[in-house]
Length: 252
Image (cartoon, rainbow, N blue to C red; front, side, top):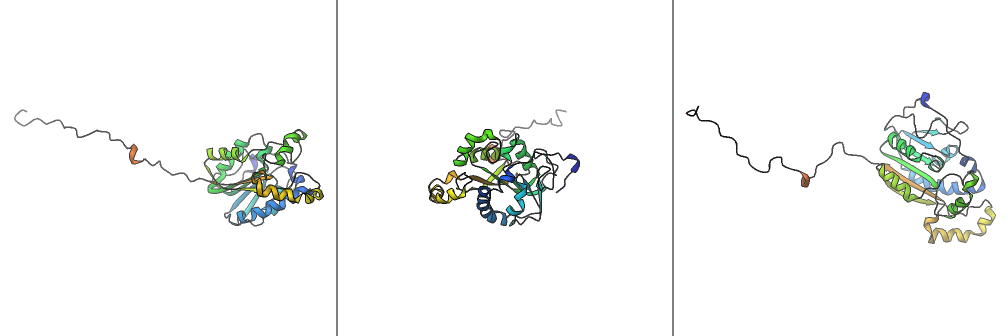
């Protein structure tokens, strides 16, 4: 993977890194990590890139088979590259795996970020999007507390359906859609443990209400040349055309 340090610029640090160190954040991260292990264990290649929540990438990608990993983030984060995710200083078709963790919900240009991810991914490269689910109790709390502008309630929560529409336009195929974490969005884990029956009920009967959506996509391979189907082929000449007769030697 080719990185140009001259084109690198800073991006704002996401407070979501600090939130994942809280009791509720750690509880949710453990669920996320256990779910991600079989996905990452089947991810191979030379280069992977994580954008967002880079402080936790070493733990999250512990089971990943990709040889070299890079983190992209702000100055105060544990990163390897400082750059805008919408202007990646990375060569085309050079990255095998990209993980966008809570980044799309905290950027003003999600479409540009996804286009850049598509550009730098190799054919059949894997893109994993991890973000909060608006169709959940977490989404309800986000609706009432987004004005606070601190993690995890800041930013914009996108539905899985909307993200799928964006990815289809970019030519990605959805491989998996995982729903992670049915814990209540409150920091008092003692209360959460007493309501463990509610967590089990949500997981069994309201599966779409998980705290996190984890979407796994692969980049499509486009054919090198367009294929013309036989039913659209056209003949330049509708039938046999009589050739003009030549003059005989006597007429000359």
